[in-house]
Length: 257
Length: 234
Ligand SMILES: Nc1ncnc2c1ncn2[C@@H]1O[C@H](COP(=O)(O)OP(=O)(O)OP(=O)(O)O)[C@@H](O)[C@H]1O
Ligand SMILES: [Mg+2]
Image 1 (spheres, chains in turn blue, cyan):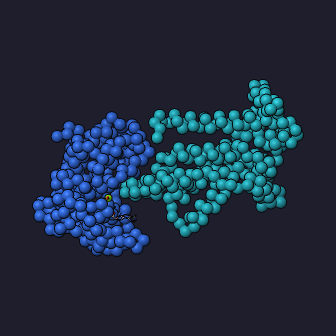
Image 2: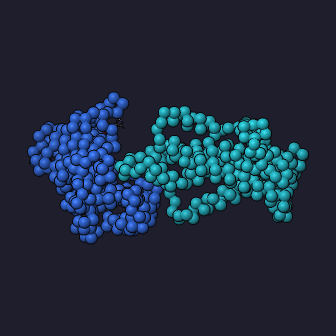
Image 3: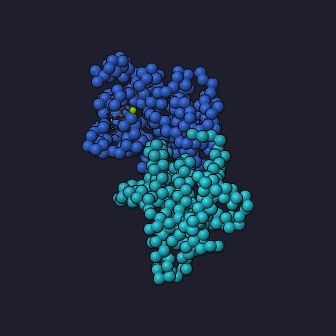
C-alpha cells in the first residue's frame, strides 16, 4: 500500500483517551431538532455514537448530512432535544475534530496551518511546527511545507485539513466528504490514514457520496433522507439488505427524491 | 503652465539645496502625522476587529456612526478640539493649544474612524471565512482576534496607510489647533496654504510636490517592509 504511511505508528494517531484519559464517548442525540428561522433542517433525531467504529453518513444532496455532523460537533445550534457526551461540555470540544466539506484555509504556510491547533493548546512553536512538518510529510504535503495554504490544489487542501484535524489526536473525528476532490491514489492515502486512526481508537463519523468508499470503510451506516435518519444499520446489513425503499434505490444508484 | 513648471523647479530647488526651513516643516509634518497614525491604529485596528467578531445590542448603530465619522469635516473637529483646549475650555489647564500635541490629537481623532472602519470590513470578511474553523478548534476569544489580526495584516496595513494619507494632507484641523506658527507648529500643508494666500503660487506648488513625494515615499517604504516579511504573496 501507500509508502507514506509506513512510519505512522499507532501511538501518533491514538487519541488522548487511549493514552489513559477518560473518553468523551458515547455521544447521544435525543429528540434533536435543528431549525433556522422557523424552517426545520433536520430532526427529530435519536441516536448514539458508541466507543468504536467508523460510521458512514449517506443520503442524497440536501438530506441533512452536513447539518447532522455540525449538530454533533456543536457548530449547529440545537433547537429542541439534547446532544450529550459522557463528559461535561467544557471538556469535550477540544477532544473533537472536524474536516469541513469545503476546506477552510488560513492565510498561512502549510506547516503553520497544521501546527495551529497545537499552538492554540499552548504547545511551543518550534515543537508544534516540527510535529506539523512530520504530519505534512506523511500525508504527502512534504513538498509544499512553506507554501501559502490558500494556493494549494483542492486535493492538497483536503489533505491539509485532515492532518490539521488529526494532529491533536481527537477522540472523535467528523469528516464531511473529505475525498470529494481527490484522485484515486490520494483517496487511498486518506482512507489508509483513516483506517489507522480508527485502529488506534479514534471514533470516526464521515459523510460520503462514494459508495465504494462507504463499503470499504463503514462499520455502520446512517442513511439520511428528508432531514431524518431514515435507516441506521451495521454496514453489512445495510448494503446487503436495506430495509427501506429509498435506501434500496440509493444503493442501486437510482435517483432518490 | 508657466507657474506649474516654476513649481516643479521650486520643488527641485527646495529639495536639492537642503533648505533648512523645508526640512524642519517636513520633519514636523512626519512627526505629527506618524504619531497620530500610530495612536489611531492602536485604537482603530483592535476596535475594528472587536466590532467584527462581537455581537451586541447597538452593533449596527455603532458601525453606522463609525462609517459616518469617516467623513468628519476636519474644520469642525479642529474647532471642537480648539474649544476643549482653549484657555477657558475644560482642558485649558493643560496648555496644549497651538502645540504639536494638539495637532496630533486632532489628526488622531480624524483618522481613527477611518482606520477602524476599513479594518472592520476586512476582519469581518475574514471572520466569515474562518468562523467555523476557529470555533471547531475551540479557539478562545483572544486567540480568535489574534488570528484574525495576524492573518488580516495586509488589509490592516492598507487601512493604516489610508489613515496616513488622510492625515498627511490634512490642513483644516491642524491649522485651527496648531495655529501655523513658524518654528513651532508650521507643517507642510499649513505652509502651502499660507504661501498660496500670500500669492507665492510657484513656491506653494513646490512645497505641494515635495509633500506628495513624501507621502509616496512613506507608502512605498511601508509596503516594502510588508513584502520583505515573507516572499510569498496571496
Ligand atoms: N444555514 C441554512 N439556512 C437555511 N437552510 C439551510 C441552512 N443550512 C442548511 N440548510 C438546508 O438544510 C438542508 C440540509 O442541508 P445539508 O447541507 O445538511 O445537506 P447535505 O446532506 O449535507 O447535502 P450535500 O450532499 O449537498 O452536502 C438543505 O435543504 C439545506 O438547504
Ligand atoms: Mg453536505
